Image (cartoon, rainbow, N blue to C red; front, top):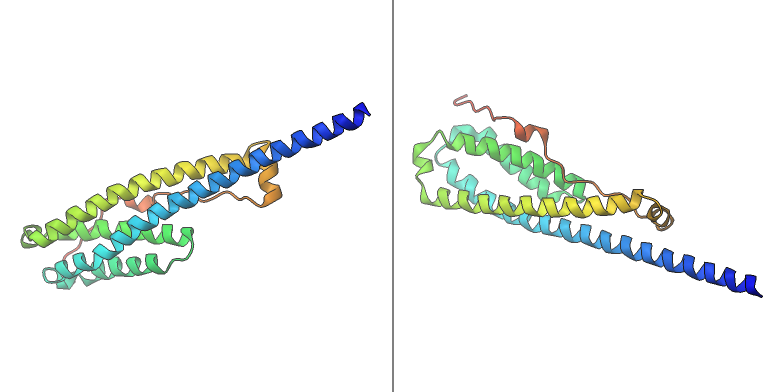
Length: 185
């Protein structure tokens, strides 16, 4: 009789532990999705701003079409990306293209004095600041989830219920390089 109570108690305790780790993993996954949603919001704001920037610069730097084309290309790739990995790659490429874009704009004093361009540049700077904060939040939530997915004993619950590690939003190594700007053909 005492053994059956002990077995029931152990099964109940195991059930409570299982529920605890499962609920913790679900909450962490929700935070990761929330973090990605925040990134998506700022990516969309940036995407909405880019056509105005490109149109403003076109009048001053028509012969620099490859730089403008790259910005538009990666903006479009970012919009059609369906997975976080595709969107991360497109965002990193867009960041590199925008760096070249602004380096190019430095060569045109009339453009640098254009109020519309200056306002768009300021708006983009604010969006980038918010985007970087969102990336840090997202990566922190991914770190917490990935730790739970890989650390004992929660890794057992994670594998039982199909929880997987999520990708970090990593910086593109090319973004650390100073852009090379060529003028003319």
